[in-house]
Length: 145
Image 1 (cartoon, helix red, strand yellow):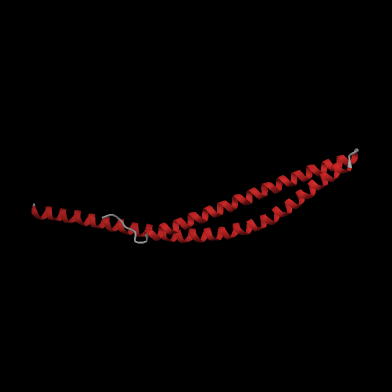
Image 2: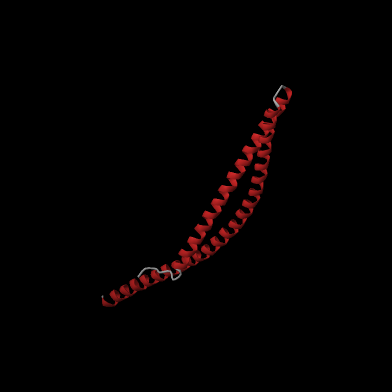
C-alpha cells in the first residue's frame, strides 16, 4: 500500500487558494504597470505640448489654435491626475493582495512541509519493514542450514 496523506484535499484546496491569490496579485501588478506607463505617456505628451505652445507663442498663431492646444494640455493634466489617483488605489490593492497571497502561501507551505515529514516518516517505516523482512529471511536460512 502506498503513502496516503490524510490532508491531501486540504492541501489541494490551499494550493488553489494560493494560485487564485497569486493570479489576483499579478492582475493588480499588471494594472499598476499599465497605469504607470500611461502616466509616463501623458507626461511626455504634456512636455511636447508645452514645448509646442512655447514655440507657437514665439510666432504668429490663431487664438483658436492656441486655445485648442491649451484645452488638450488641460485634458492631459486632468487625465494624469485621475490616473495618479487610480495608481494610489491600485497600489493599495496590490499591498492587500500581496498580504493575502503571502498568507495563502504560508498556509499551503505548512501543509506541504507536513506532507513531506509524513512521507519521509512513512518511507523510513517502509525501509525498516523491508529490512526486518530481509533479516527474518536471513535468520531463517541460517537456522535451516
